[in-house]
Length: 302
Figure (cartoon, rainbow, N blue to C red):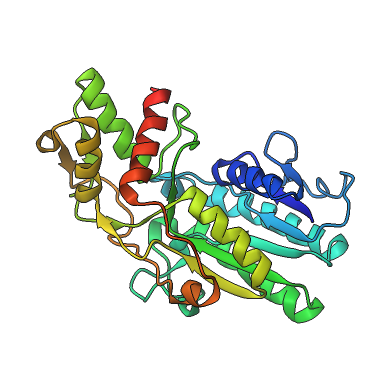
């Protein structure tokens, strides 16, 4: 199968391209350095075979309060990226199924986090602009399906984790990497460990390899749907911190919590009954093992 991947140099993109290649597919991937998707015609200017699957992973965002500080840029850049990818698909790759990633921040936190609620309500205010660009992406897929009969799929993961996540200086990190790095630096260098929020906010994690397997499985089996991929269980930040401390030897009682800091939504736990109905999956990697691998990765980058 010929497969095209945008965002191929990102955390998920690298894992996805490696897995697709290992499965015997012919993979063409583009990243920010070799194809600027904010430029109209950038994809059309490249030679392309006929693809069967297009995975659209590219997005302009970061974790933490990045969306809060860059709302106009989030709207402009992500709308350009998504419009150009969809225009290229609809004009010249109609035989392909387009598989996109829809972040869980698209959900209104006051509503059930089930697929039928994805386009309803109002997302968290600090993430509103980015979330709405992703809702518009899904709306574009639905429109292409209605007008042209094109096949599509939107997959919505919980927070992904595991080795390979970029830890470049100056970039805000998803919460689990922020916890691991702060606790490791506290253990190794004696730095104070101050975590954002009161520690009672709740999150769930999906190991990146497990997500990639689910993503490929859904792409091969499911058309014209939106599907959550979650862990089925969430934990508080204090619980995650205690688990990391147990593996690193840092005293959990030394952690400080800054209740005035930005934390986004208080809880995010996806409903996954649709996933369980559509896709039989092997057992997920246990959290304790996933954390060990993640801690080893971050430790090697300090």
